[in-house]
Amino acid sequence: MKNPRALFAKIGDYASKTILIIIPLALAWPVQASPFRLKRYFKNSPDGRYVFIMNPRRRYACSGPFTGIGRLYETRRGGAKNALWKTSGWYARKDRIFLDKSGMYLVRIGWGGYFRLSRKHDGLLFYKRGRLIKRYSTKDLIRDPSKIRFRSFLPKGCVYGYKFIKKARLRARRFHVMTMDGRSYVFDIRTGKILSSRRN
Image 1 (cartoon, helix red, strand yellow):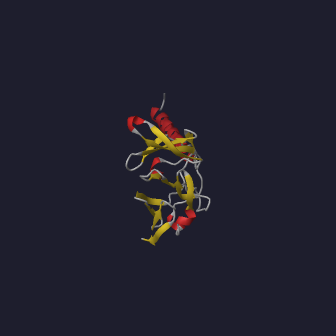
Image 2 (tube, one colour; image 1 turned 135 degrees about the vertical axis):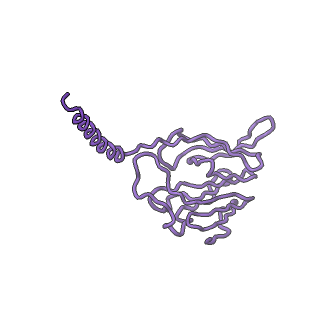
Image 3 (cartoon, one colour; image 1 turned 90 degrees about the horizontal axis):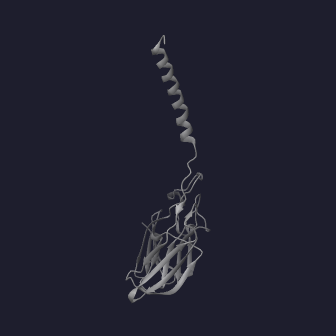
């Protein structure tokens, strides 16, 4: 080996060029996100007398809205359960379900879609004994779409829809919501009607 320094310089030059080619390719390669795991869960009423059990149709899925079957049970002594009513055709995460203490009424936060507000996108849904009594789309609830983070494109893989609810809570039979555009609503869960609406 006549000139070891020259040989090492060539190796270093080759390695640096290879890295400069590989890094941009890695960054440009589409990322395939894993499917969402849809879990079976239990949600108790505030006093623990009733329990809502949600079962997804599929354990893994990539984009919503998702489907499943929910059943409400009255709990009895000794762990026995008495089935009272059920829902079908939809699945929602545990933090998007609100059950009142009577076990009669349920409120669900829906799925936002991706690119824009639409009357086809479920916003808030009110149920009585498993039957839908009132539905609001995301377009019904959001007055200022500029406050919503929509997707400009749909990346390869599994993605969530746009977020349109900032806060939500159930107090007695009043459902309180703050939307992403800063509007506060109060609903009567027995009818789903809006009792008040104001800009914060």
